[in-house]
Length: 471
Ligand SMILES: [Fe+2]
Ligand SMILES: [Fe+2]
Image 1 (spheres, helix red, strand yellow):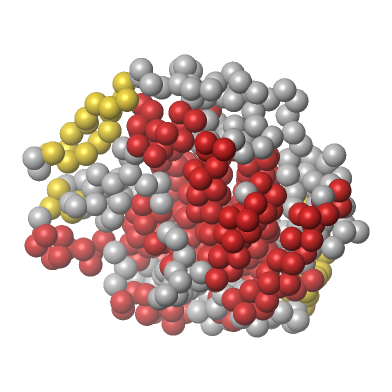
Image 2: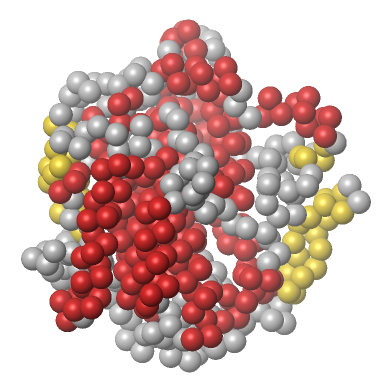
């Protein structure tokens, strides 16, 4: 069951060869994916041999194989985690009933929508990051970028398989549309706002993989709970791949901070710009920006759609089993934070209507862990500055705070107060310009750009100066 068939044109562990119609449909989609990768994937480096991991087994041990491959030769495929025997629905009004192997007619539209919205983000991030290769700070980082990119491509495959396999003609149309929308395209943009912004530099890339891929972790975690079992198993395996993306973000930002701290000490200054690095207050503003736009991806804290998805068993909470409540939530009271009459207040609401807020709170706690680690690095260097996450109401465009202005500390501001101070809190054009000016590719084996410290270890026990990309 777990073994992946690599002799097939589309590697898979779903017995694709036994379903000729589906196999043909996906084999028709495959060259379109290849065209999309050539046109919208990483710019340059398509002939380079990259030290990539490929899934060979979905089991706990040894699921990945490492080796040098050209990205266009990467074996994108369809990998689902093993089914759990006698799995039952873990939450909502149908709690305790058997999970679904097929899509129930009454939930078809909602499930398709959830899959399309998730699927759309996967190719979007590849498009957002496509220019970054030529300014990579090292071969190690270049390899990590491409690993993230090929796996986001595979996540698109994961969602396209579900659309083709379970949603008939509508599903096939949606799969085609995945390759027709493009990040930032004026006529055919990606569905979610944050996925239409360009990722212009490597600091933004690390912030994106830390904060925005982490939103993905929570969305996939919520879908892993789904009563639609193929979706649950698909998301479960995607989460295994996703862990590396967040590692790239957490260690990437951490290495920038470490380098800044070293230079602050070496030159006894807060201003490391003349030394070719990035100041701590700039890093704080990047954190403010990326965290706040990622919070918007969770949607409104109070949401009828989210309540309906929960009731129907389509999308749960992250790690549903760890909650010690009834997992139905229709009679459970909770509160949500909002602004009323110019004051921050907690308003009562059924917990079911607040599952987005719950997912978002879990995400925030997870984000804090990295910030604490980064602050330890600063403390270890004797630097008395702490980075922090801004208030949940800061710089928001979705939900209870969308029509208000707040400072990172949580002070409510009027429009003038916001306009006068926001440049203190969000990266300025000059700052982005400075970060951009540091982006010069470093492709010599074992060398590292001056604005970032080397990683603590290499990939898959290889040394840091390994030839991760053969140009
Ligand atoms: Fe992904
Ligand atoms: Fe990711």
